Image 1: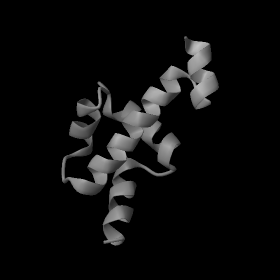
Image 2: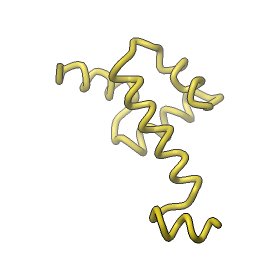
Image 3: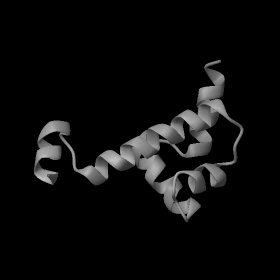
Length: 74
């Protein structure tokens, strides 16, 4: 099943799951005033620092900087 998923999506199931969580984090950072720690917890990250590291790898900026940049767009 994992091989078929990779063939279809071009990534592993774990990578896909993390991508979905990071896209949800982006949405929450743009559309709410929820603290970063609360967003991390809501998305299943027990450690906010680990969440920040994974978010930075995904988006290229920290969650806080992402929120600031998205607020400038509006």
